[in-house]
Image (tube, rainbow, N blue to C red):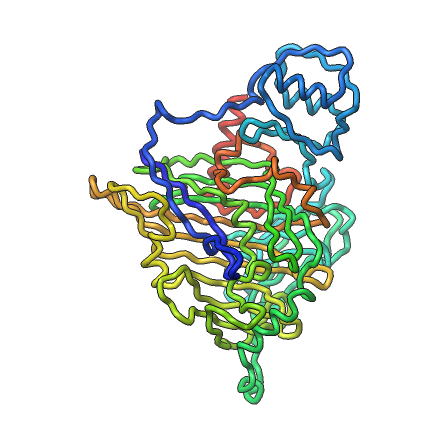
Length: 516
């Protein structure tokens, strides 16, 4: 079987960054024989025996490194290396022993390559949280509404509806009585007072129309709007680093059947918006993966680097389709009217390449707040010429037997208000690709969807997320999820899966329970 690695890569249009733009998908083709397959050793599955009367934690870790070949990385703010412990055990699993004896219930122990990482479990919601779930529907047609933004007014916690209009949100009891806001492009926002107990609700959103007087339309200059976006960037976006809690999901369908689904809670270090050279870092917190009934045919198809490189798709911070400070741009802009989003009037500015020469370029719409000139959301896709020439961008190493041909790649990004600033809210990327087996004359179609939703945030510094425990560009998320977690949902806000994905995890949970 041939293995395909799809890699999301980000590139700013600024001259000092030379990475590929947005979620491009290079492939790595190589034969995968079972006899030669690499098996990752899981240190946490092994059993250990040791005996120390009194020893410091740092010396204990050093001893394990010498005796068992394990290296350790830990957060010094939650584990004091000079603290003395009594360490005696026979045939124990290391992660369970550490969790029991280190005296901190908020830590987590996991493996990254050949290293054991001990870190704080971030953004964990209290067990007595209030659960609000339900569905959001369109007021006219009564149809479910996907990707409706849901958040507490003026607070950091939020979520969104799935493609079936359903949502689930966990909230600490301190937010009882606050306003929960539901908003979507082109609709009046709706609010709900947060109740004191678990609640199931149905929310109805009604469309709105926004029109400019004809005399004003004549004076709307899209280039001036984009210039104001650049001028007001520092006023509209955070100027201090943040730590974001996020939910990330990757799903792969082959010929319309799910063949792989992986979900994860991640933590993102987000540099300030006036620090253009800084890069995001990502820490994997916990995850689960579902094994669908149908296995992949012809090839082994995987996504590489998703959470890290997806976190860097921030068109405001990195530049993206915006003009440079000098006013130069690869794109031409057009005014496409007004709309209504996040409870405010927005300009809709279209963009397309000035010279669509097959270089990696995009086209789409950007929605900009009429009063503050903040970018609120954008929808875009690869141009036709880019798609036709995408093999030279997307394929790292070709295969004579198999031929891959992408035929669309589209993306959505949006922001939400917080403390008179705008913060990243969600990103969604979709790509469809045909793969042809020239030898057997068989054709198959893969559809990939990656979704990232910011669920909470707090002030942070780069030192809060060490390089040694961060997700790397060559990591494959599904390979980082070590075991099935039956309590994955318990104390984190996530994007509720669609019904077909729920069924995959329900089947896995049934198998998990039967093996206990």
